[in-house]
Picture (cartoon, rainbow, N blue to C red):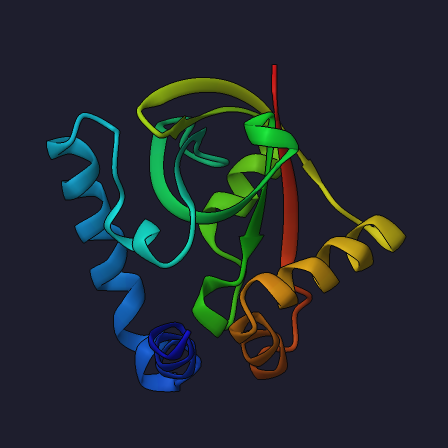
Length: 156
């Protein structure tokens, strides 16, 4: 798909990494609200959820639109803490480490989930799948010194 390759190429640039974190989540939140949770603008390229987690430090509820890799026919999802290839782990990953019980909005349905950080061989296998799913993740990883966090969130 030519369109997908162009989007992947653009999303791998440093310019995209500077702009996208400020624009894409705001647009996704607006579309999600307007459509009563049925759609995310970014889901036109990648499946997405809106994660509601508890702030690691604040204890406040945080809503974050995220790309995801659905598994097991929507019973679990992989969340990838790429942060668009920027330094530092995204805040939502710290939230899930501190408070693994969360919820996601998936295709208009709110679902209670529990998050688990993937490590070792399990992480390696999922990372390989993630690279096939969205090749720009390789560029994001090469750009940063940290290991990109992968979480599996599963229905409670």
